[in-house]
Length: 286
Image (cartoon, rainbow, N blue to C red):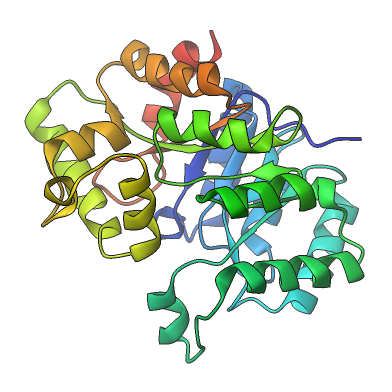
């Protein structure tokens, strides 16, 4: 049975993850009833405990990792955890892997060299451990890694991208492989509030060369990428407004070739954005 993530899901960063397991269970049970197809979890650990919590609380929702880092999470440990969780909840765990960023890898005392080759090696290890290609995805921005994602996994999960990138990625993938880009959103029509919340987040990613290089490929200039980022950059990467306006940006990704869009709601506050998930659901699922 193929994993079906549906047309829209949510993306949740590790910093927003509640310590209260009962809150996690209640939140994702509600997310499922709202019609979302998948929950993507940023910076997943090798034990896959957080996706397992989601699956235990739901019956159809897909839990996807976005991502398991190929440098910091040993493939044998990840494989063992995958088989445990997939065995308990068949065809509902999508193992997203990726190379991450040199800054964080080197903080863990490892060298960040030849990331493409490292991803290939990790996929080889997952093959040897019996994890089917159809139950994993690859975080990918550049054409070479996008192509690899289509050849060695269910498909590609690009992060911090625009609908233009989605169009380019679909051209590389061709028909068939999953294309599941992430899209940041702020559910507000207050321009000052939006720029305060979104600007801080976009500025953070400008310190990570992988993203900056990809944004240059998309046509953003030195002026856009300097300092904390231009307004043009923020508006290009973050959809904002009422639910219908945000749904229109999500639709642009679908028109450009996305099968599924991972919606990351930015609020500027800790915790899961449950009120925003509720408010967006009718527009996204309509």
